[in-house]
Image (tube, rainbow, N blue to C red):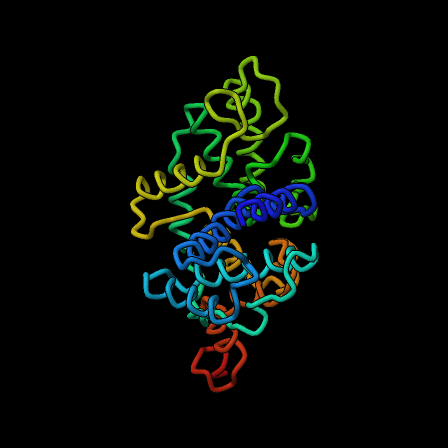
Length: 302
């Protein structure tokens, strides 16, 4: 079974356009299932039937594993079994008719305009790292990028004159996103004053660099954002994805078309973007007060 897992991981790395982060998660999730089989003295995947999978999911639930994590593990196992079936290594997929736990529908968390401004203004821009961090925060909010997309940016992906950014998103799909003047200015200052000092003698095209002149990593950006959220006095624990949620929410609140936001976020399905239409009621209230003849607003009363 361990050899099958190694072959599967190799397949993910070489034959599919998925990130190393996803490969690592899928590998851990499948390994966890194989460990469960060993604990239950099941030495072959052919002996793992639908009831085995049901026991495994139930075992995870009893351990207090979050529903979202159980669903992710079930998704990894489905992918694993599809690979095994395609390679004629097993004849059946036990998960085919087994449903994972239903997720509670949670609305995305986002920052207010004031909170976002405090976060962006928190870095000390008298240092190269501060200039970099200010540019990262401006760009995350201006373009709604994923942190993995920020990390992957190279210098030639940025067009400051047109304020456009070429981004490689999930599934190696390329899209062009936009940024406003503040983000473009922050990037320009970082490139001219901050990046050149961080780069030193290192030869790299990476846009955002660490203090050693190498491409910055995702975990470092996560720490940077948490640090500035504390400095800004934000009560919410802020992650990079919350800034992405904030971008989408503020865009829709400002009247942006849902499909435009979908394209900017790089969502394959409109349903992934629609969740943001339920986040805030301020736009709905403004539209109602402006449009309904008996809303009670000054305009409606006329």
